[in-house]
Amino acid sequence: MNILLVCNAGMSTSLVVQKMEKEAAKRGLEVKIKAEPVEKFEDIIAEYDVALLGPQIRYKLKPFKKIGAENNVPVEVIETAAYGMADGKKVLDHALSLIK
Amino acid sequence: MSKIQDKFMAFLENKFMPVMGEIANQRHVTAVKNGMIGIIPFTILGSVMLILRFPPIDPNTVGTDPNLLIRMLLTWKNWADANSSTIMMPYNMSMALLGIFAVIGIANNLAKHYKLNQLSAILLSLMSYLVVTAPATDGALPATYLDAKGLFTAIIVGLLSVEIMKFMDDKNIEIKMPDGVPPAVANSFASLIPAFALMIVFYGLSLIVQSMSGMLVPEAIMTMMQPLVGAVDSPYGVFFTVLLCQLLWFAGIHGATTVGAVLYPFIIQNFNINAELRMAGESMQYVYTRPMWAFMICIGGSGATLALAFLMARSKSKQLSSVGKIAILPGLFNINEPIIFGAPMVLNPIMFFPFVFISPILGVLSYIVTDLGLITKGFAMGPWTTPAPIGAFIATLDWRAVVWVFILFILSGIMYYPFFKIYEKPLVEEERANAKAEADREVTASA
Image (cartoon, rainbow over the protein chains, first blue to last red):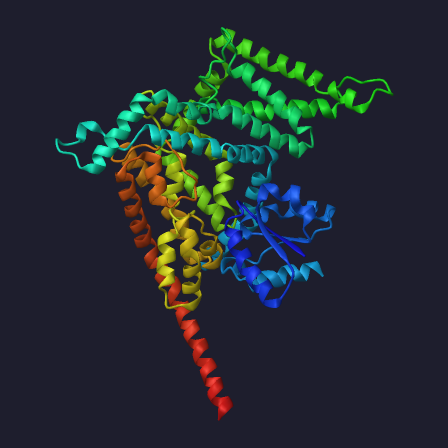
């Protein structure tokens, strides 16, 4: 399972990625999670099963949803509070719920 | 009062945010933004050479008996003065050719958006840029406008040349090969007509501008832009650009990127021209620069929230203290999404005034202090994730700038404090009530 998190420079989101990886390890899940900057989205989306956007780039949701649909990848925005608190558990659950 | 507040929030969320989102997504804005990201490594490389060239020491202010550190700096300065042109070559081939890198980045991004052949687009736009900016004389390209002074020209030529290619592509204006010619051969003719068309347009434009004004295109563009550049480089320019950035963040949009798409070319140009002036031994011209934005206006990230992160980390409210603790470390590197979305600042009516207005105030104060000559103008730039005091020092090589950053940090803390207290109080009470209810339930359960 490959999960992509996207934010402006891929920096603030890498914080969330760390927490998600810990949570995934705790559950014994085989997942690859990566944070990437917004301008790389189009080039790499095909390699992932699901993509979540940081709330600060919510305005990209429409165009990215379209590109995601072309590649059969669901795209949604991370819930604001979970993002701010770097709540790895919640964000991981969100991502997993979209894959099924 | 609260009705007005509700209306304002609804306006931000339903009107302001979608419109600004559209602007941020607009293809030309995105291309320029990504082009500006592409030139960052070259400005940092050039900045390192500038620092090497200008050690932070003034021989005139050194006493008769300098200590070891001062003597080392003096040795460094003598060495740098003696080897100036060798040290500055990497600068001259990176930061001083900023326009070239910008036009390539912008053309590449716009061509990618239009799904045109990116390599052709880069080559053709580079040709267009060179013909208007650096027409060869005596076997050499004049480099005068290939640097930051050619940045606006690079933006215009980069966008316009790709638009012309797109137009020709849409209208199928190309050399048609008869069937049976291998596609690779046919493709080799594909960029022929655009090459001629772009040369005619841009060389023609350059000749017309030269004969009418005696100026090269980039010089004419600079002259035309001068009022706008002047308006941005003023206390009002600082106040309103930072205010807009903060309003966007308040509405939940990445304000720095959105405003930056338009603003960064100005303030990047400003510190680059300062660098040129400093190298030439002239006095620097611009006050509002990219490093001022990154290390004085945005200490700890947009909204200057680093001081607030420290306040929150010590809060009695569990919610605030956990956000504060998460936020301090990234905040030292000017990343503050945990605060913006965790506190949250977004659409938080209590935090509206401090979050939206503290940064513009810090900006105006920094402008005034720099303009008065109390701190040196910025002319170099490290990565924006450099901790603010270090970033400010690299930008100015002036220890007073470091002191100023600490003053701004304390000021922002003082201004955030009353609002933080108002926000904290009900949260603490609520948490206490919840804990009490929990305890009561346990007592009842065990009874």
